[in-house]
Every structure is written in C-alpha cells, then in structure tokens.
Length: 174
Image 1 (cartoon, rainbow, N blue to C red):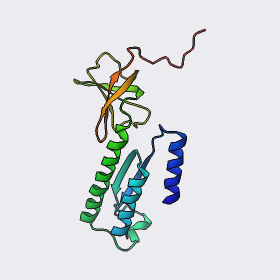
Image 2 (cartoon, rainbow, N blue to C red):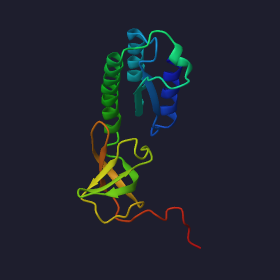
Image 3 (cartoon, one colour):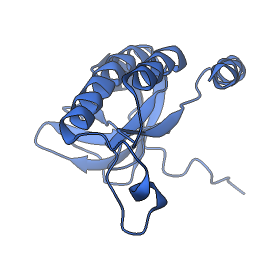
Image 4 (cartoon, one colour):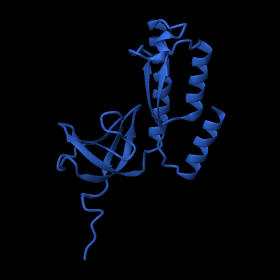
C-alpha cells in the first residue's frame, strides 16, 4: 500500500488535475475487521477521486466460493456503509478544490432546472454531474465552458464563462 500511495502522490505532483478512480470489494471471504480498517486507512491516505464499492457475493463457478470464513451479510452491509461514508467525505473534499476553476462541459441533458453535463473527470452514468442551473439554450452533446461555483459530495455546479459553444474546437480554417 505504501508504494501505491507514493505513486499516487508522484502522479499528482506531475499532473495536479489527474483524476484517480478505483473499485473495491468489501466482505471478501476471510476479510477481518483489522484488514477492513487497513482499507479505510488506505482510502483516507490515497484520497482517490472516484470510487465504487461492492459487497462480495458468490458468483457461479468462482474459486472464492470454496474459501472459508464467508462474511455475514449484515457485516458486509455495515462495511459497505462505513466505506462509502469515508469516500463521500473524500469526494466532497476533492470536488471542493475545483471551485473557481474552469472546465469544458459536455451537455448530457436539459432538465427543468437547466443543463446537466460532465467534464473530463466524469464517466457517464457512474460519476457525479455538473449542474448548469438556468442554462437552457444548449443542445445535448454540445460543449460549453463553465466556472465551478459550488460542490457537494458527488456533484458540482457551474456558471457559463463563454456563450460560445465549443463543438468545433478541433477544426482549423483553410
């Protein structure tokens, strides 16, 4: 784990805008409370931006099904909740660092509150979104620049900084 933390720190020195994501499983057969606490400590130190977590469940034909010391469902659920609580705090802290910065946003939908999209750091349907409240005159798939003005545990809110859509950024004139 120490080497992984060192690598993450080095990567962030090289590229401060780097977004790191990972997925974890809690409640794997034989997982002790001490091992789970080590995982939480790693999570705190690594400060991973985007994290998914799942409870272990047997899969047909998997070798792990034969392992001893399966974890009771209520323990797996408790560990999942504790894990996600820690990650939610990390996510809120990481997203707050984006306030005041400008990002290109891809518009995914326009709701009654305004446009909703994502920036380079957001995987569709998995990560949080960028809310552009009051912005209605945009098309799905278009790109706009926004300054981040607010964040919570998972989402960020932005305000347009340029009325021009950026659909043709890669085109050059003859």
